[in-house]
Image (cartoon, rainbow, N blue to C red):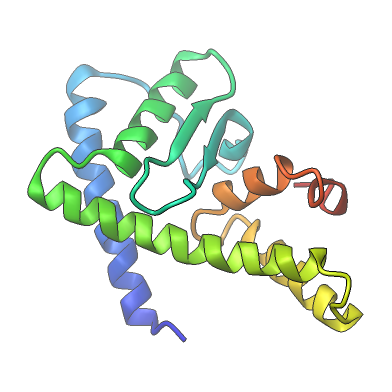
Length: 162
């Protein structure tokens, strides 16, 4: 089990990385972006994020509309997830990808539990509960799990409100 201090230090590291990149690519050019704290906007509806098939590959970030705010936000997220143009950024990129990929493996485990015919109903219920938790707005990187469910022909009918 991950300790709260370890999880907090990872979150702090990610925030420092993104704030540093934001200053360079967004603030320096006076670009407007979506406010991640805006509870009236489900950012996962305007920006699609998908995990790569291996941790070293880039994370896919795709705007889902043409508004300037969405385009700028997607650009920032792409930099945050994928830029490794300095030694420190490359290390923090790897840490970020590793954390996301750890959750992706959990996601795939839950998918497999639901997909396997031999799985007990109680295990399937537990897997659904885990996936429901992963798509909650308080779960780290929930945008990924929402898009993986939406993009999956097997899962999307089971989670129609994602």
